Amino acid sequence: MRLQGKVILITGAASGIGRSSAILFASEGAKVIVNDLSEEKGEETAAEIRAAGGEAVYMKADVTDPASVSPMVDEILKQFGHIDVLFNNAGISGVGALHEIEPDMWDRVVNVNIRGVYVPSKYVLPHMMERKSGSIINMSSCIAEIGLGKRAVYAATKGAVLSLTKSMQVDYAPYNIRVNALLPGTILTPFVEKYLRESYDNPEEAYEGLKKRQLSGDLGRPEDVAKAALFLASDESKFMMGSPLYIDGGVTSG
Ligand code: NAD
Image 1 (cartoon, rainbow, N blue to C red):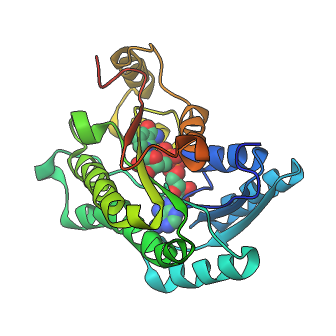
Image 2 (cartoon, rainbow, N blue to C red):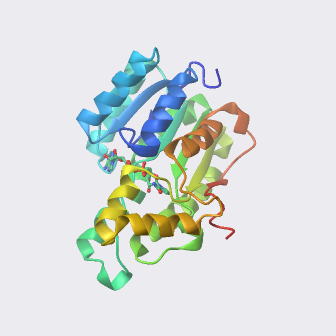
Image 3 (cartoon, rainbow, N blue to C red):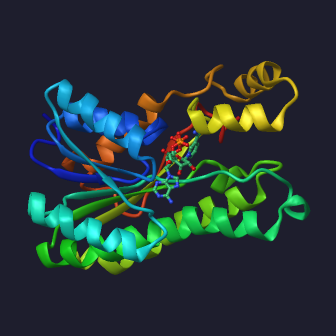
């Protein structure tokens, strides 16, 4: 068991990569807090883990809202006593070249994808600092490095998450807290399915086009990213600090 007894908070864990990570982490012995805005899907994920013999609870909170995240962190500490790992996974997309993006969409994507890393970290960090132990995993994207047409605001936020990760690492290394980033390529999740449906007249053709962009010849699956997150959550990655970890089917090399 690679995460035996570890208490792990995953944001946006009711769907896609977060959900897959919650299931994998619990199967490796972690006590998982499934956070998400979606109560129905969050409860479903936690119940599925418990039915398989794992330990998980759903906790509702909006990652952008201190008034919602702070009591959640207090509740986790009350129920579980400590937090070993924070996986800042929640994120949303925003489609459009820069001039096509309306200000409210810009603000929404920036809010969830950047503030949504800042707020949970702000409330979990003092506790990790006191214990002098912790691992934080921030969800960036390979788009932070290579960019992508019609995804200006999304790319900007994922670049910001990468630089935030490095700055956080410098500040919290003295407290034995590791902060690393995941940079997935295109992973077939509800997030990508929605993007294909909303952005293309022929989503099937667009999917085939996306596959051709990967050196791997296909998109990744949520489990592919969950396995990398497991590595960063576990002590096996103890010498990784402020590092970007690519899980991208070769797209940044192609
Ligand atoms: P997804 O849409 O399947 O899941 C995201 C979850 O986050 C949803 O359940 C949603 O309800 C939740 N969420 C959104 N806003 C929230 C908020 N304010 N508070 C709490 N929860 C909130 O998405 P996914 O594809 O699994 O993506 C997960 C993360 O991985 C995102 O940060 C995304 O940007 C990143 N990512 C995805 C891909 C990909 O190709 N799928 C690639 C690179 C990076």
